[in-house]
Image (cartoon, rainbow, N blue to C red; front, side, top):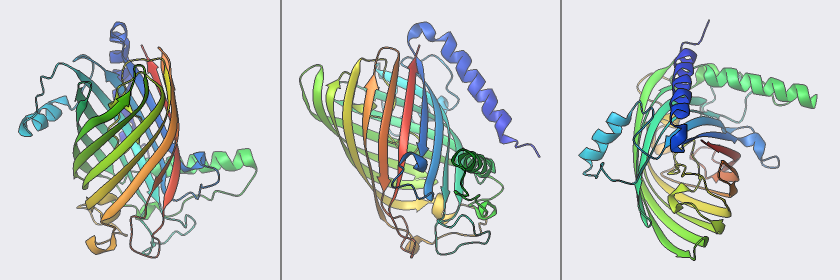
Length: 342
């Protein structure tokens, strides 16, 4: 049976490509982001956050395709923000995130480990910024529990076994027990504010920025973060490419010749997480409010290299345990980002 979600994504991607091509003279671009535990060979255990993929279309002025920008504007007005700020970067993103338990070979529900869960989504972001402060708003709509994650993981695992002539990794057999299996709509609204604490010289040699964020919806939490960059820096402090697929504040700037090493740390105070606790639809495996960690830490370290046409980032990411069960553990994944400017 054909997946009904894929035509929707093809139409949006095609429309985005047309808009980017139309805005080529205005210096816009596309970002491609890949999270994969396989990218960290010595830490790869093929569990927890196993994969995330996203494609983002971005512009620096109010031109292009913004499917949810009306919701972003209304959210900003409700929060009392100046949505007419002259220095704004806009984007929309198509993405997916996938989570699995440790034992992929078990076809039965596993009640002591995190559930299978997946999300495919469309989000709109806008960042209003000056040289020292930035406010970012995002509205995300998505669908939990589709078969996209299962089919993608089966394809990747089969491909890896064929090129390594191995019987590992095994095919996942428990996706029928995922959160909201069969599909359920969801939404998330995020607001974050960042501040440049200190910087040295121009072009920058190093800088330090802090931020806080509020997330409401399928993931409800507040968070605080700190980020450090060092190298030959020409981009804005709020363009640090930390966790763009999930909950990062990152939004690309216009092309720059630069390179820098960076590190970021973030702490979350968790109120609710549908990817662990389930949403409205019944799910075979969920965890209660008392079984999930209330404070979760994550961070990353990476290298970003850019020129006037493109940018690439390599990073290693980690996250602390999210459950209080016997499966409480840290997990790690790698990230590769590609930006192409027009």
